[in-house]
Image (cartoon, rainbow, N blue to C red):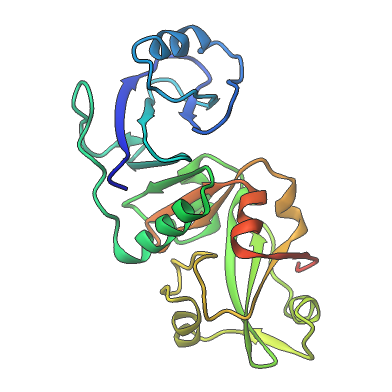
Length: 248
């Protein structure tokens, strides 16, 4: 993460919330004049689309040398936890080790993603949805099942319940059960409550509910109850090699 630094501006544009990096074209909205002005400030700023920004939220602009974009930010009650210097802030420090594993996987895959920290925690799908400003359907629950003795990850929407019988059938197993906490840690490397879909080298296979594939962006656990990552379902499938199935 040493190549990424942030520059912060205060945006007072109605209907705006955050900035997603990596797109070749911006979406036009009432904030276009402001964004055009910010782009003109420095040639090396990446092209940024505006996505659902809320009034008064900070615009995070990345100055990067990597071939892809990874937005990293830390928020508390909707505000950045630390002030950023007027020009460039300090390089983002390393995350907690489990979170860093997720960040490193995203970087190696070369996909666009957003990693955020919520000190209050996101222990439930409802809390996660409130924290990131999405619906529960856009929250990914990462559940470990043991199907015929094989650890299997099931990725299901936050507003649905995984069906053990359907998960087992999709895994090609005669039966399946929810994994115990010690099995979760052994198979994924993450503590229960903070399980991310990747990296999970000891997992036999990953299944993803078809309902998640209709969204432009979904939010996954990122290694702890305090961290989440926004990623497109297409990139999530590519990283995990997940197979779509009826799981709920």
